[in-house]
Amino acid sequence: MIENMMQDQASGLRRMTKLSSTRVITVTGGKGGVGKTNVTLNMAISMARQGKKVMVLDADLGLANVDIMLGLRAGRNLSHVLAGLCDLQDIIVEGPYGVQIIPASSGTQNMAELTPAQHAGLIRAFGSLPNDIDVLLVDTAAGISDMVLSFSRAAQEVLVVVCDEPTSITDAYALIKILSREYDVQRFKIVANMVRSYREGRELYAKLTRVTERFLHANLELVACVPLDDKVRQSVKRQKIVVDAYPKSPAALALSSLANKALTWPMPTSAGGHLEFFVERLLVKPTPTEVPIGE
Image (cartoon, rainbow, N blue to C red):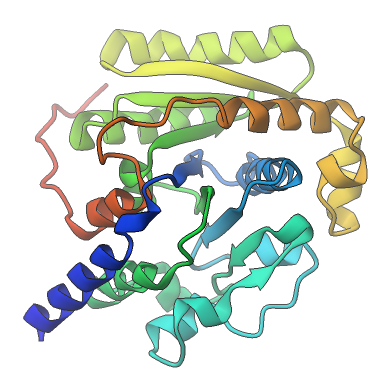
């Protein structure tokens, strides 16, 4: 049975070899409530408005909300794929500007605690993805679960969303520490979210870099300071995205700029970071390196 499962996954990978131009970005943060989904969707909409073919994977498998934030009705989700009731292609819903959404389930505990076989089934399902995606954005769950770590270590770029709160900084550091020390992820792009000024965003970034530079060999880069903006709250209540509902608002301008910047990040010259490599790295779980307990 395991041999057949591996063969199916390998077959899925071979079908994806033509997807080498896909940019894969995981948006994470460690703590819940820092605005990961909002950042993800605003980037997606901004990129799609420029003619890019964008897909968003809602990887918060227990408390999904991507489709809800967009006011979409998803008849089926990833739980149906894992149950063998349909293929991944069958659950994709179209959002604004043609953004394709892969919805997860909400309020389903077993989706947040996948068995190894279910995890493998999810990865295998990626073999049926469309072959013309420019950007895949992965919106992870909060915390440092195996699924969060898997999606983060496999992506081409890892965006860590942080707010100016002690718990947000602590949880972001914990996530970076595990990915850096145990999974050899060394590059992280930081989004300072809901800050009152650019200076506050820089100070937030400095707080995080002070501890990472002392204890880790990780490279952090501040890529956006997104201001605290009431238009974001208003757009969420309307089930809209702020770059679409209030494109001239301070938060919308910052998020549009982040999306533009992300499209200019260098693509890897080797296989690493492409969509088929992303799936391949999800497939093979590395053995974590033993690290000292403490810092």
